[in-house]
Amino acid sequence: MRTQTNVKKMAILAMMVALGVILSPILRVPGMAPMQHFINVLVAVLLGPWYALACAILISILRMWLMGVNLLAVTGSVFGAVLSGLLYRATGKQIAAVIGEIIGTGIIGAMASYPVMAFFYHMEGVVLFTYVPSFVAGTVIGGFTAYFFLKALAKNGLLARLQRMANE
Image 1 (cartoon, rainbow, N blue to C red):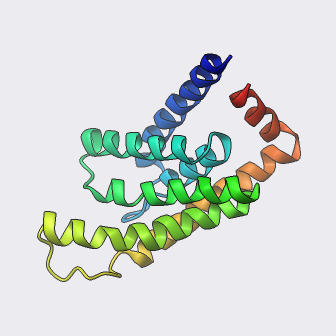
Image 2: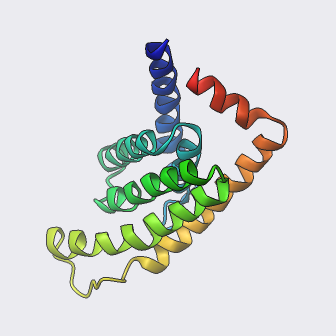
């Protein structure tokens, strides 16, 4: 039974990674990746924080490899994915997942991006809060898109059914 659950979760994870990679360049705002944040919140709510972390890492690696984006893809996704899942797990509220994504990526991830860009990429003029405005804006767009999507799923009972199916 446990193996079946893991296979279902891995299949959902694979689909979400594929969706995240496909949507990323299509629905992109320069300097932001709102679809990454949309996927982070969805996976956090459907599968939990550790699957959300795996999804964020896999999407980031694929975006770097296939699309030539820099390491901001990683720092701009992993913290929000985990915090989103942890806050959702603690409260059971979709808005908590969105808040976790905004704080995790918009603030923590943005500040973690400073040393990456300053030291690995030798960027001049980068300071601790350089990426906060664009990261917060991207997470607000993607996070609230996910929130309204999840609310629509919950309204007709599909969200609970998907969560149940993933955990059976």
